[in-house]
Image 1 (cartoon, one colour):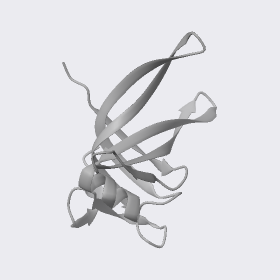
Image 2 (cartoon, rainbow, N blue to C red; image 1 turned 180 degrees about the horizontal axis):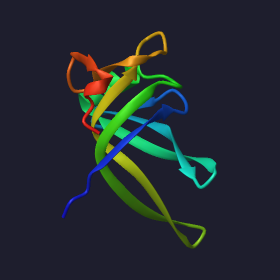
Image 3 (spheres, helix red, strand yellow; image 1 turned 180 degrees about the vertical axis):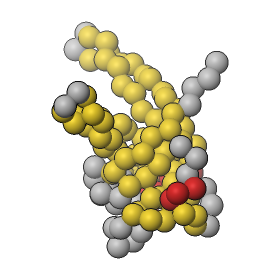
Image 4 (tube, rainbow, N blue to C red; image 1 turned 90 degrees about the vertical axis):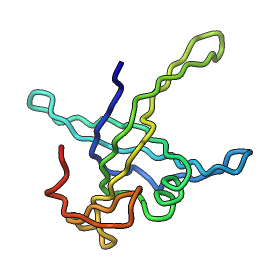
Length: 125
């Protein structure tokens, strides 16, 4: 079995960082991804969750409007509300690349798993 997702989009709002009862940091954010549908352009909103050091890094350095590349796995959960089964989906990120500089311009990729930088042109997807 193989479950891998690669997405590039912009944060729709500032990330929300919290801690589990065990003290593990977790950060959630949503990215908007534009796609063409015939003559129209539509937007998909994808929820992303990060854990531990990556969560701290994303919580500290990401903000609304920043462009990111997310690599991870799709996770689908379900719950019951008012007698109806509801489904949610999100990307559990293994790696988050920051594609916006501090001034908001595109051009530098900063990995949430490393402290180095690399040109955006070197992203393998």
